[in-house]
Image (cartoon, rainbow, N blue to C red):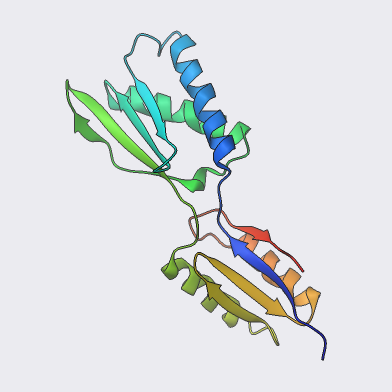
Length: 166
């Protein structure tokens, strides 16, 4: 019997590209006419993979977030990989918004992806959940291509990448 072909479904973010986008956005905040004297700040904690945005109003906060999102898109970082929290009150009548990077596939989402692949009813396609990724097996590459095409059409609220295609 021939060995099964496989690939991994992962959700990863290139932290170097995120950091580069953050540096560019921070530089634009100091140079852009309408934002440079607004006292808005943007910080990125690499350890916790979290953005902290502090601004004097919701409008300025949304402008800063748009600047960061633009830089992330230019760096080819999917915007689904940043989950923004609700604006909360900070000191001195300011607004704070926390944005967290999503790394890996959560158990609930992995189970949903697994169920959706099983519902395709493709013969001999097996899915195995391995921590924060899924491995899909099949004796035929054509079946794996169908699964990849199907998953690209779905929206699970996070960016999916397909790696280790063997």
